[in-house]
Every structure is written in structure tokens, then in C-alpha cells.
Length: 149
Image (spheres, rainbow, N blue to C red):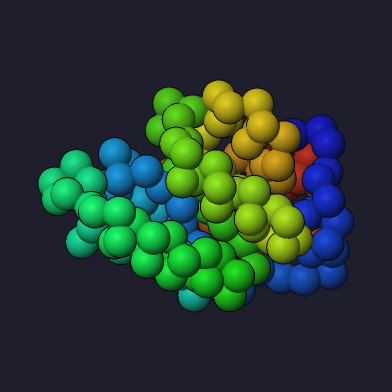
């Protein structure tokens, strides 16, 4: 990525120590792999409620309201978000979460380049799940051009 977004600038000088994994329930298997890889680095990792996988359970309106507010609080507590963008797909809820994270000055990392241009505009780095490494900690300190060519 050639442009360094304002969330990148807001994170200058900070090392990422906590991250929230954002994902459509379609990709919860991949989200769990990312969670394991991020935790293996010693990061504090906040996750979606995997027990509310909409592929397997019906999530009613009241549950969705509660889960949305609960999840945005996780985003607010973290230094960055890591978005699972399987095939570039993010989904409506993840788009909201990315916008919120960006507005709070959090670093936004994605597993793949998002197809939604509005989300793509807010991404600081694309880091495939299989390539998660210590570099993730520095995504808020250095140009993403140098870290993720």
C-alpha cells in the first residue's frame, strides 16, 4: 500500500499489543486461525463471538444490537483491527467496524485486499493469515510500504 492513512499516522511511535479480529461469520474458521497466530505473538486478541456463528444459529435483532455494541467496545480497547476479508469480502458489519476503528485512530490490517473501495481506503496493510508475524506489532509505527511490500 503506498498511502499511509490517518490511522497509521495516529499510531506513529506505538507498538501494537492488542488487536480485534473482525470477520463475517462465513470466515470464522479463518478468523480462528488468525486469532491463534496473533496470540502466538503474545498479543491480546479480541474476537467475534464464535458461538453466534450466523451460519449455524439464528441471531435475532436484540442479539445483534447487543453483539454490535459489545464488539465495538472491543475495537475501542485494541490498538488495531485485523479484518478477515475472504476473497475480498468484508460484509456490512465489518465495514462498520473498520470505519469505527479508523475514526478512533486504530491501525487497520486485512487478510486480503478488500473489494469494497470504501474499506480499501482505510486499510494500512494487507497481511495474509499465513504470513502473520512480528511485523504486525510494528504496523502502527512504520510506513506499511516498508513492512509489507
